[in-house]
Length: 444
Ligand code: NAD
Image (cartoon, rainbow, N blue to C red; front, top):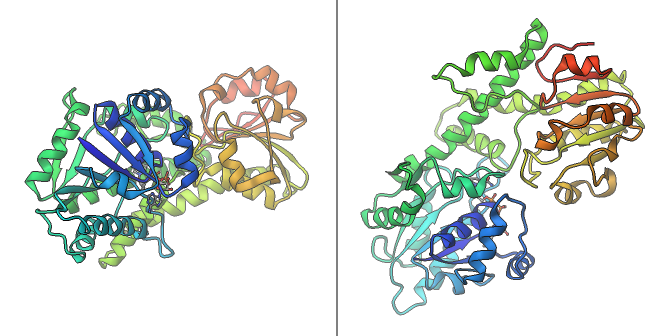
């Protein structure tokens, strides 16, 4: 199939590359000229495991190309994916301007043709209930006819950054939201190669598809905030949240995923999607109370480390040297959008501390926010030199089993604030560390 992907970010680039890998002809459009130049020269603008390999192969075989010109991509495309940003607007609702503007541009191009043909316009972005209708209206306003010239499909994406290629190639399920049988059949054919192991392709109505994506992200965010509250209580009653987690996760009704206590969730999706669903509730006269709490618990949790450090240093962080391991909002990505590490850095800088950070992939993306107001290290042991404390923000594999004797001896003072519960508190105490983690007893 000929496919156009509008927006070449984490979702667009991964989807486009994976569709090309299955033999489709894919043209990706982005308005960011630097990004398109980079992609055309064979370089990836993001870090994502396994992407490079598929990207290189499909470029070489000329199934994957990049342009800034909608016309190059849209006119030959049978299916057009919108993988555009939907950031929170001022009131927390999803800003649909990118999506609607792109739909308008596509419609303008199509109406200029003698025969506009038939294409499927797919909302791949995470968009609130009713957006498929709004995209359809945008097309109809230009004189195009639904069912004849176009159908709009809601096809939410569930890939996780850090495992995006694997998730896209082997999705747990594919959701296709459409009331058009013609569009449903074509979309099913497109996705069949990805579900050969038997995972389902669910065809539902547009509104249910839109709700599925927000419900999935909100329930995952709720689990994280819930476990963070359990952790806070564990600390007060002398229990260990990791033991509690193990005890509940064997219950098949609960399962084992998304039960890790820590310093809160970040990323470009959970905070914005929970907020947007809450806002959808408001717009429909419903106060979605749990979501309010999920967000406020998360804000509190992302500040927790700063308060702990402040308390440890008796309210005087001025001039303290803080080493930080991990900047990305989670491992295996360079993405720092809404990262807890950034909230912590801001709190530390406000209090006059000096921060030196190491992350295997997210230093360049962090520089965009903090420039030279913090220092960056090229290896994980360098920031520890003479530091007054180490703060761990991301559970990259290499932080799980470091040379702890070296960490101890390199730090100016052997104090570790671990936001990801990577080490055994008793062992850390035996080694002579002052060790603080989340929801576990402090062993001195
Ligand atoms: P992103 O910010 O990484 O990428 C968006 C891209 O769109 C950018 O390259 C930008 O330059 C481009 N763009 C902006 N306006 C444009 C226009 N008018 N025409 C062409 N290109 C334009 O975003 P993302 O993380 O890929 O997310 C895209 C959507 O997918 C969002 O709605 C997000 O919520 C959703 N989503 C994201 C993830 C994720 O893990 N990142 C997962 C599932 C769903």
